[in-house]
Length: 206
Image 1 (cartoon, rainbow, N blue to C red):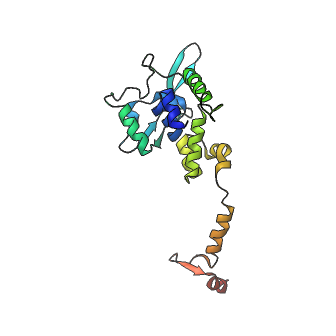
Image 2: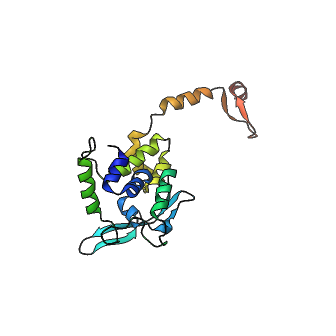
Image 3: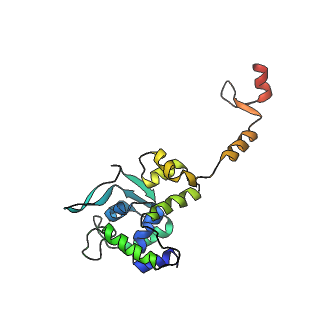
């Protein structure tokens, strides 16, 4: 059973797709309101998050790093979301709870997700948060550099991104050496900045 079948089994196709392909944290996805979506530009503005506070309940506030970001949305997902928010007011939640129309709860989501993955061959032990890692892996495999992945996931620094996902980036040492070989006949720009100087010319100037 594939990702789409799993999502349909859960009944949360759109919200899980946002976690998987846009890299949002669960709390960020549950806090999304219609006004945060610009589906013509295929962008989501992430500025709020929902967390559980003991003795209080679900509380909406700033994101984990107290910052906002804009993430891209694949075309297929933009079409799904367009259907999801049809006829909704800008202040309405994109993914309201089916129980009470309020915020989705992480506890409920984890329980349902773990129950579903346990029933799917090859998905046992997969966590809800792993969908965020899937997004990072897909972005890196598509050629995104570390700064792009940092912005996508909302990490505070690129160092944090490298610490978590550095092993997924390709080893570019050979590519660097090959690039140097391709430019071995030149030493840089000329004194007037108008072009490059052959190595032989540069040596005569030393």
